[in-house]
Length: 329
Ligand code: UDP
Ligand code: MG
Image (tube, rainbow, N blue to C red; front, top):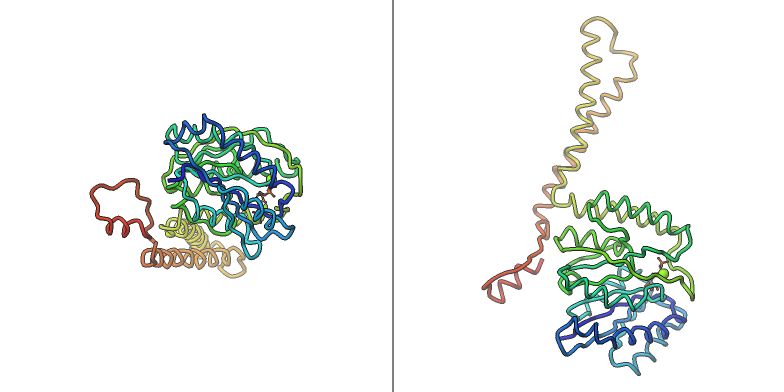
């Protein structure tokens, strides 16, 4: 069995690739890394070409011809980093799997410490770009984003979107990624019950090419954050979300209407010509709608396939068939 799979998504990184491969091979030659795994140590480097148009793919083919550990998956067009990681994860055969960016910003020398940390008893070790070598236009919003994600998800790490991460095989075979959700892999893994930690890693400035994510990253990140929050927290119990919002809205509307009615009954003010009455009516209707949306969501999530998703930790004495059935969802 392969000990370690390195998964490297790339999109137009022609200048960086040869140097990266050299550095990766140097890192894989480290006897201390080998000691962390059962002998004999073996590795594979899965390059995922996310629709490059700068000749990176041809270069990768040439590199594959002279290095038997290299594998290449090449996409028809640019599908995004999440899709590239998904393909790499499906192909990975290693007991441990490490992702790295292809632009030389992640240092392959971090692979060994990350693996050492993983085998201390974690399922995912996320890199932490403690001293980040990127322009402030990127680092400041990112700090904010990380803080919000940490608070909302309760997952105590500082750098959710770090390119370099080390996983146990079980994690990458388990998690499902959509949209641009590579940013939230630790969140998804955390909600599946995997043990997560972080380790500061060396981060380097980008030397060649330019960043592949413009300012659109922030909006995409926001929507994916909402989706992740919903999927991990409320997917199985939509009523908790809609029900609460519905209840608040309904009760506020009800109180307003009651107040207006009482004033009328006590002959203080007539009901007509009171704008607040409309707010009351609006909130009551909105509340009822939210409530029924929650109910519908609840019905859908219980009847839909996969509505009851779980993650198995261990089993005992199950037949192969049983095993396959419970794990196939
Ligand atoms: N990448 C990719 N597909 C894309 C965008 C980026 O495979 O659509 C790769 C890119 O080549 C790099 C990694 O994802 O290896 C991180 O991208 P980048 O360095 O541009 O992100 P940043 O460091 O600016 O956050
Ligand atoms: Mg980069």
